[in-house]
Amino acid sequence: MLRIWLASGKEKSIHNRHPWIYSGAIARREEGIVPGAIVDVYDSSDRWLARGYYNPHSQITIRLLTWDETEPVDRAFWEHRLRRACERREALRCDPATNTYRLVHAESDGLPGLIVDRYADWLVLQSLTLGIEQWKPTLAKLLMEITGCKGVYERSDADVRSHEGLRFANGLLTGGQPPAPVRVVEHGHTFAVDVYHGHKTGFYLDQRESRKVIEQHSADAQVLNVFSYTGGFTVYALAGGARVVTNVDSSSDALRLAETNIVLNELAGTVSSLEGDAFQVLRRLRDDGMRYDVIILDPPKFAFSRAQLISASRGYKDINMLGMQLLRSGGLLATFSCSGLVSEDLFQKIVFGASIDTGREARILQRFAQGSDHPVLLSFPESAYLKGFLLRLE
Image (cartoon, rainbow, N blue to C red; front, side):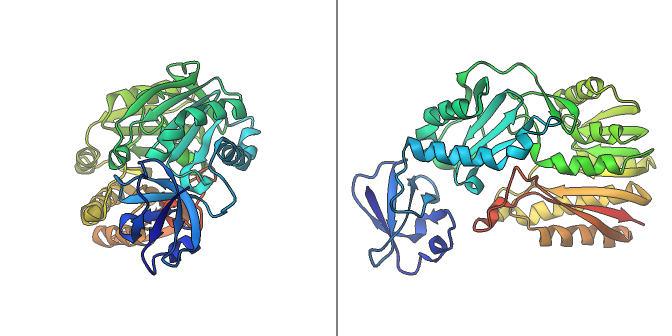
């Protein structure tokens, strides 16, 4: 096994089971280590620490896989990790009202760089690191064997691949092609999912439980769903008895698929769509005197680096101020951030600032987070990325 040594004092995070080693922590390495290779990591006193895969092209140079020196990283290793990830989702697999969920959540399942989402009888895989890329064919075959699904389709088109020296890669890995769209069921609601061109792997699976909360608070309500994408929150709001729902999104394709999802569920209620930049659309609605009982703000990621935190905070404050200005007294605002660099504490301060600047009194009724199929590993707090609040405003 090829060896890498850390600089003195850089081993604490490894003892705490954090799976990332940055380039600055490395003191020296053996000759002949190729990118993607499995390496053993030692401290400055030549004591073995952990084992992982290596990529000199990435700032995160080593991603750790095991802290057991006797555990080889071979086919059996990957099979065991995949089976354990599936076992953690056993309750979802057995739920007749839901057949779509995240099957593998990267570092949180001991598989850094690997995302696998299940859409009925198909799996969509994202390979985000060079180490996973080396094992991708094996992982696809194992997933078919373990799950009995009909096919594994790859959607490795996330920007983070460029940090690993990788190009985008989309296409069938094994088995049959998924239909276009795939029909799935979540909490008994039917959705058409475009796994070929949709955001991420096709659907925002991490909002499953948040959508259920909106359903419980939408009776007889006039609802504004901002950054609506394919209408996940809209379907739940209508199922909960909403009178009127307005979808706002910049993508005409997403809005059309949202209309399809409403038809699939045979839901009553009036639905309209507004295509355009959400900030501009909300300003226009505010100036027109529109008011709503329930508003959902589920924007895309605003902060991709620490250098963008200030501008992202401004964006979150602006969109929340607009939402608060459009909400009736006593109305509910469900507001989210999926920017991992924006902590829950910071996001709460941003929303508080928006309430002060709009003169609204806001109370947190509930805190939102990603679903249980997107678990947060305690030794890897970076896996907690989705946060949100259900607020009542007066």
